[in-house]
Structures are given as structure tokens and as C-alpha cells.
Amino acid sequence: MLRVPFAALIAGLLAQPGFAAEPTRVKVFVASMFEIGNNTGDRAGEFQHWYERYWLDATPIATRGALNPVYCNTDGVCGAVLGMGKVASSSSMQAILLNPALDFSHAYFILSGVAGTPPSRGTIGSVVWATWLMDYDLGHRWAADEVPPGEPLFMPRKGYESIRVYHLNPALVSRAMRLSADTPLKDSDAARAYRNRYPQEAARAAPHVATGTHMTGDTFFHGPGMSAQAQYIAKLYGADDYVITEMEGTGITQVIARQYGLERIMALRGAVNFDQGNPNETTLQHLDPAPGQTAGGFAETVENIELVGSRVVDTIVTDWPHWAAGVPIQ
Image 1 (spheres, one colour):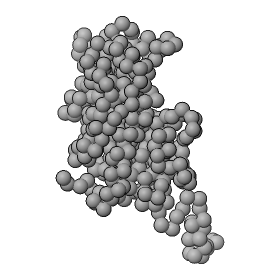
Image 2: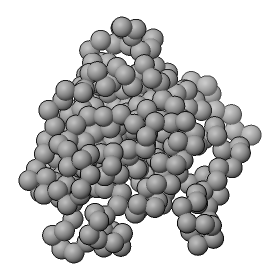
Image 3: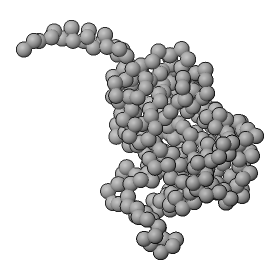
């Protein structure tokens, strides 16, 4: 058997791409799900505004098993595009957490992206910090014609509770909200016109910063019936009102929580669509709109997410001695 001298083994490890003798101590990690084209210089997806604020001069850190490289600045702010859906995003997150070039032992996490919202609870352009993350998929479901009208179409299955329901750190959510609630948000004429198709007061409101339950589902559920199911599930577990529908939160959170717990996880989503049509259109018409009939406000919303989230990131980094051991008590 060939025996490699210890010194040679260490030298080989140090020569690996992305390996540093002293790993980067991550203070905040921003996880986005997709980008449109390049990270800068074109139409912005979920990652571009973050990238342009923190990582324009950063060297990408390749991570085996992750969909995209990680970027870090000299202040310990890191981020990556993980992929869409629970499997893609959580597998990327797992690979990144295991990269020896990165030290996450004191890191805060922001799960950041676009989402939908029920018109009774939110509006296009709003940005919502999660108080709870809830999995929409785990459990039992059946067709509507198999039960009396109005009866629930979902039943939870015991044993999933620990990976279905995540109550995020109330102190951290409260602090994030206080730091960002008065952020001036972008809006557009197109978004305002689209909101006015809906009769609900919440749907017609101007963009704002809020809190509530984020519902994670690999299925892009749509329509008033599915929306009611999501609210039913939130209430079944004693969570806050369902206000955001997304596709990754519980998957990524499960991966982080297994290694580092829940105390430093934040989820921030901006609403770019309603989870159902207005009273004058069917669910299918809303899902497959005619040209020119789509919701406005995407560009403004992805900018709003970063405007809100960066207030928290910058506070944590600037005041790191008070945040390193946990959320400061005030």
C-alpha cells in the first residue's frame, strides 16, 4: 500500500481550489433560488441586487455538489444561488455547509426570493419576513369530489411535525422587522394597475414590509381552494396567517437546522403574484394569462427584497461584536 507522508497530504489539501488554511468566517449567508442570465448587467432575478451590493469584486468559491459557486466579501457576507424547489435548493445548501473553506459556526442565514401571496393577505411588491415556515406537501390529500363540499382536503400525518413546521426565532424576526419596517419600497404603474383588478383591500394596498407564515410547496398551488388549504394547514399547527407561498424554505431550513439549529435563520420573500385570479377570471386563465395580462412589479419586487434585507445584513456585520453570540437583547 502506498503511504503518503502527512506533510504531502496537507500540501495537497491546501492546493485544492477554494481551500484556505483559515476558512472564511461567515457572518451572514444569503441564499437565493434563481438568477436570470448573469449575476450583473442584465435583467435582475433573485440574486443580482445582492450580488451587485456585496460581491462584485468577489472570487467565486466552487463547491462540489452545489448548483452554483459561493461568493464572499471581506466583511463575512456570503451568498449563492441554490436552485429552485426543495430538493435542488437543500442539496446545494448541504454541500455549501460542508465546504471546509467556509466556517458557518456563527453565521446568520437569510433565505431570500420571490413568492406569491393571497389577495386577502398581501399585495404585489410587498416583502414579508417569515415568522413560521410550513410545508404544504407532507401529509394526506384527496380529491374535492370525495368529501362533502367545504370539507378539508388535507390531513396531517404523524411523524412529519419536526420537518413540516419551523417556528423561527421570534427575537430575530422582531429585530429584523424593526430594522427594516420603514424601508422605502419601489412600485410601478403596472403593479398598481394589476392590483386594482382585485376587490380585496389588502391586494390593492401599496407595497410594505410585513411578517407571517411562509408556505413551502413543490407544487405551484393556485386558486382560492388551494389557498384556503394553505391557510387551513397554517392554522392546524397554530402558526400565524399564511401570507407567502414559495418552494424552498422548509427544505433549506431542515438542512441548516440539523447542523446549526433554528436560532439564526431568517426567510425573506417578496410577492410578485397572487395565489389566485381575480373574480373575473378562472384559475387557469390566471395561470396562463393572455399577452400583456401578467402581473407587473417583478423588477421592483426583487429590488425591494434586497433593500429590506440589506438593512439587517449591514446591521449584523457593522455591529458584529454584539451579534456574534446571538441576537442582542434590547
